[in-house]
Length: 326
Length: 124
Image (cartoon, rainbow over the protein chains, first blue to last red):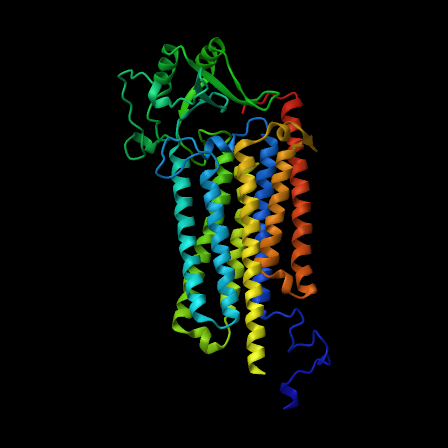
């Protein structure tokens, strides 16, 4: 028998096996190690975002102008309100999660059930909110003009109100269809056409004396530069190349393409984490209902899933700061 | 004897729940301050700069770190873990994140300088 049992000579030492040198179970330790590596992924994303933002510091869009929509209140300018709501939602679902973990420590199945169901509810509302935010971001609000050099400029009136390009465009009676792959010869295609063409916008801009162009650059007072009417007209005639509505990975109406790319990647990656967290929560919740942990004599699984859920909240705290506040 | 143990446990639990709600209120107040500052953006904070970033942004970063501390320490109960465990996780991440942020942001600032002061014309 001796041959089949390996002796290391370290039995009894703290790292000799059969002990928990970190004072935590294997599963919990590994959850922490995973979260540590995952936080490095997120910090890599955020560091790349910060670097590109520093690079385009003088033309970066103002978050308050981009994220200013609240559901059921379309068209009202309410900056910060909705992201703040999402933040509170995640903090609150974190609190219910930690209460569930705490109740689990005392084998209080009823309270675990209650708090976990609240957490799952909060998670679903958060995902729905994110879907709303993405939908608004992709669809766009006002549209913008892209120059030949790729710069995004926006149209305002003399009162400083943002103008929707669709509203000022003068129809020219020219209908053009988007060239799709199955329509043309040689399988050529083009990107989807905006609802109004740049010629129509130019004509409308010329006709309305109150319209001005705002550059993406900042002046010395940290305000975006507004051109005079003459400058705006010259700019429109010489530089304007295309109309941009909404956002995709190639261009967007808010600012540099990277602004939308990082928004999609970072909030998308976070939303993916929330989805996975919800999946884990639902599996664990089912086990709570079935009494699995009651029989096992330990609610540690709730604690491990809780760690993951808090991590998702932790990441959102940083995303909130760097996308919506700074 | 059993009664006193149960009572003791009960008291401990009450204390823990109280601590959770205390942390919740800290987080709520900090977030509310952030949102209010984000909406009003007081000019006195935005014009003054520290290391090329406005004071307001430094405040946001500081408040975020406060929130991160409370989430990890109280919600993820890092405060109850062994010292060695705690340091394994937090020191590693803190060091790496500070390092990568420093390197990337310095690089981003360099790219900004190149694009504005170089002989190439940049129209993006």
